[in-house]
Image (cartoon, rainbow, N blue to C red):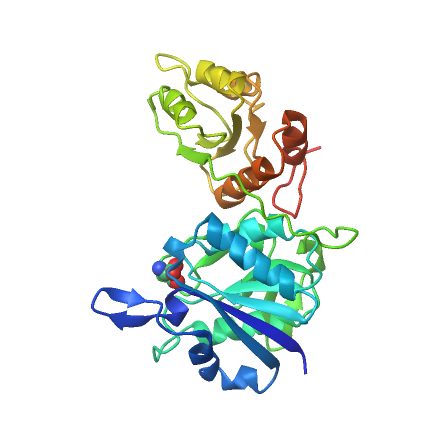
Amino acid sequence: MKHILLLTTGGTIASRPTDEGLAPEMDGEDLARRIPFLTDSYTVTVRDILHLDSSNIQPEEWQLIARAVYTERTGYDGIVVTHGTDTMAYTASVLSFMLRGIPIPVVLTGSQLPIEHPLTDALENLRIAFAMACSGAAGVFVAFDRKVILGCRAVKTRTEDFDAFESVNWPLVGDVDAGGLHINTAALPPRISGDCVLKSELCRDVFLIKLTPGLDPEIFDMLHQMHYRGVVIEAFGAGGLHFIRRDLISKLHSAAQAGMTVVVCSQCLYESSDFTLYQAGQKALAQGVLQGWDMTTEAAVTKLMWVLGQTDDPTEIRDCFSRSLCGEVSVPN
Ligand code: ASP
């Protein structure tokens, strides 16, 4: 039988109704008791590492989860991590960077309804997560609603529907039908040679700006005063920022002078940004900002946190953003 490690962190899947609403009160053993069809089919080791609503999962928790996965990677065929859905895409993205080259499948899953609810989606999600964890396909993935998504391409797009996650700008890694779990090998992360090395250092001083028409450029002065080292800007459409009346472009220049790294993406969920298309984008590129291309916001923010955690050398930072590290971006030739 395949040996699977189940790491539990909380989330709706492990929640029970309380006076203050749903709270993650079940522990790993409680969860395991609800899935006898899995514990009978696999050798399952359960480890309870957190009991949190994923709104409370932050960089410290990402590091703890990454360390737990890294430490256990050689003892199991695969690892399933149960996690709240709200920030699962951030966790899946950041783990993809921290655990680049992990030799086994690491599969995050959760549910829209608690596992104890009669209509729960948890059982189906755990079934596919376990199947993926046994697949031998190395990398970090999200399994949800009979789909497997590359971790750094997952986005939560629905609050209630069981089909809560989408694979953005990337084909599905897996889907299930009567023939079983089908893996699309072309959608797996790139192979990394050599042993997996845990790189869990992160810079927490990264800010996300969703550009709105007329945004006050002084926001950049404030971020600089607060010692932010990185900014991701979700700009308009294929890529543009306003420079008449309120000149964001000159602020990008001062941000770069002050040593801040700025990554520009699109606020459109689908398809790629390209800041070379319009004058309003080219002016931004001339200030030294980095392009996020088709990265999800979750991947762009966590990549910037991770890269700035590894280096403060501008050439190395630029190099990391000019290529895909774990399948998170398609950079045009
Ligand atoms: N608030 C919950 C969480 O993210 C939502 C869920 O798990 O579906 O922990």
